[in-house]
Amino acid sequence: MPEHILSGIKAIVAMKLRRKGLIQREIAKIIKSDRSIVSHYLSGRYPKEKILNVAKIIEEIPPKYGAKLIHSLTDDKELAKSLIKELYGIKLLWDENSCIACGSCLVCVALTLDDFTINIDENACCLCASCIFRCPTNSLKFVRENYD
Ligand code: SF4
Ligand code: SF4
Image 1: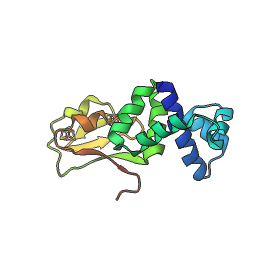
Image 2 (image 1 turned 45 degrees about the horizontal axis):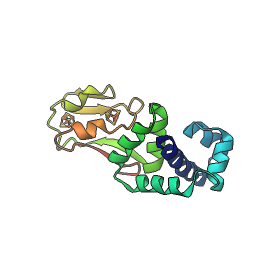
Image 3 (image 1 turned 30 degrees about the vertical axis):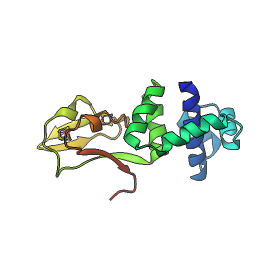
Image 4 (image 1 turned 180 degrees about the horizontal axis):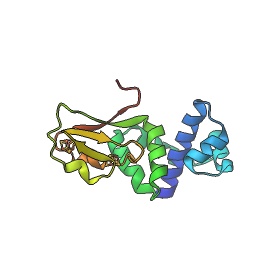
């Protein structure tokens, strides 16, 4: 069943990428699927409507929960990151005003603390949301990509 849910999420992401103008080969690379499967996703032949509906519900939940869920569906962190990024259009943001420099988030290699400033290495971050749940002051958040 989890693999089926992942198919539903891949199908939604494939359609989003298509609307952005990407061709099937590019979409296949991002969602790590065969081009023939991408073709099925785009035509609506696969997966079943029931699976797509589950994926649509996942798309509507807060991204921090959706990210956890998607990572639980695959061991491939790069794939999970791509799906989360495209499904929710988010990035991780740190709020300097509320951070108390407690260091609880520093178990992740993507985060470093330097002179009371948390630096986020976006390449190393797989959008797993663990730091968001660790932070006692809600200083780490997923925000929409076009956030200022
Ligand atoms: S979202 Fe995950 S990978 Fe990214 S900085 Fe937080 S704990 Fe690290
Ligand atoms: S866990 Fe939160 S409060 Fe603590 S250092 Fe990290 S961002 Fe700051």
